[in-house]
View 1: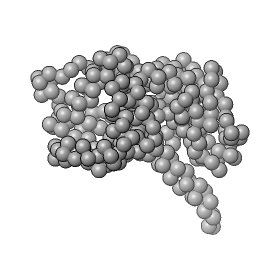
View 2: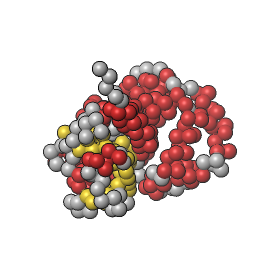
View 3: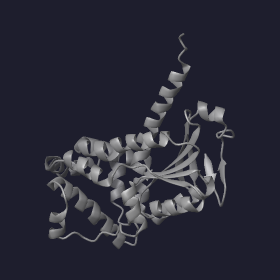
View 4: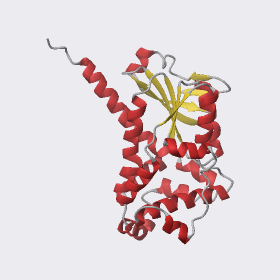
Length: 285
């Protein structure tokens, strides 16, 4: 593992991980940034090195860890899970929604599903802000820290409005009713996910939700009750972000929501296997 201190990033237990030959043989490793792991992925086709950090999007602890990672790696590129439009609004201080009233809800463009999903996201951000947390602060600081170390900033997510539209198309009130009807029985089946939700303190809840078991259960619950929504919100975006990251060169620090990390790792490993298989094919004259 890599451990980050003040201005240093060092390997623990794997002395030659950043050697190109060793990275080719073992493209995926975990690195420790303070107490939270980041995933190291090597791109055999471009020789790029990716440090993939999964965050909770709400706690100041995530913001601090992101800053330390960028300071220590000093990457060529800082990639963030935002489209360019949302990034501009975030950096301009415009990502501060207020609680929606009925007329605001009705004014949201699109279908009823789009209105519902948009209002849930905006109201959730307001509720979190009322606790003293700053949703999106880690992304804002990642962009600022990236600029401070001279890195290029890459916005690797799809357009937010497009995501919401597709999510609404893949969501139904019938699915919501089925979840509401069965959710009490799920506590015993998914103890890590529902155990995290029992924390009254949002910071503790976020930290518990970052555990691999809780993240795995969150995806399983989503795919069981809201398969279309998870396809749009998680899996399709994973594909979009990995495709963009695979085109980059140099060292990259990428900041995404923790739910995306495992899926992005699998896609990355698939791309590595495909590239190495193609390279190993004999040339026929």
